[in-house]
Image 1 (cartoon, rainbow, N blue to C red):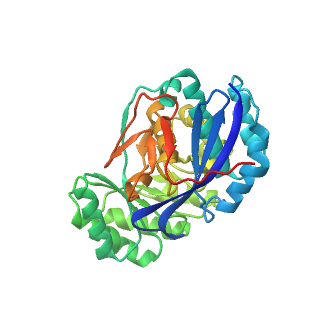
Image 2 (tube, rainbow, N blue to C red):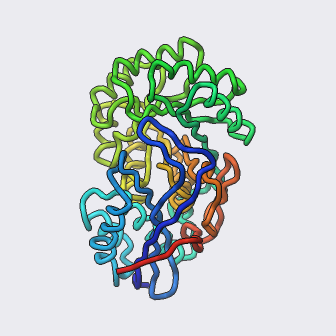
Image 3 (spheres, rainbow, N blue to C red):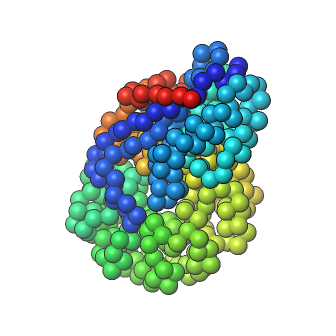
Length: 364
């Protein structure tokens, strides 16, 4: 099996409601879909969201990386040397992790289809079902409480709350949500780098002292501030999850060695795909640190790939794969089934994706 063609195009999926964080506001998923076709006819699919404020990857940068670097390095490659193909993805150019992730997951999809086996089975997984949280965007407290209540009515029992736009309101936001949902509802918060270390400790400990029962906080300080992250981890009553601070295995190792965070968030778009995510998993296993599998605001193709990894690795104990749940429609045929909070795997080979509607592909 040799790689005969690499194509890409844009997909647009409207959201149920606008997605608001401390960094951005988004009304729809506007992602790049990658399709790799083998000379045997099999097709592998990947996806990359342009998330410039986090990864630095714009839509134009992703398409440029595909056209000028990734596609030329892989065309004609023999998939019997799968590890070599994955290496080529990571060495074709620096940075551009979202473009690399899309191509990497398409290769895994193609490889699984080559041997007639789902990717999660190829990785040794036995789970066929995982449960995700869902995100409540930053808004006035009463609006966030309403959105949290709607999420519970949809069947979600774990809610991730975006905070950080106005720190003075964050405790009020969480108090309103806690009052609006059943007491057993798990609340996670994501500050998206919005706080200073001392501010984070004060806010987080204040939340716990008020009985808000926060399960964890995601990236409370700037991504580059590992000393600040460690400061919060050592002083906060709330466990700290490193997110934007972890772009690859090297970042994960540094955080694990210094104990700068309690948990690690793995996102395929930050680390460059399943191949590098597996390296982070191995490091976390060695240090005995649990992981979350997360996503940007991604569509079903990319989230499906992350779900395969989550079903394969027991060190991934927390799931934040709500991208498809936030979308108003699903243009993807095949792959995992997203039913409310539940993600169900299928035994279809590879990642199981058959096609994506509404994509006008282009190639070299």
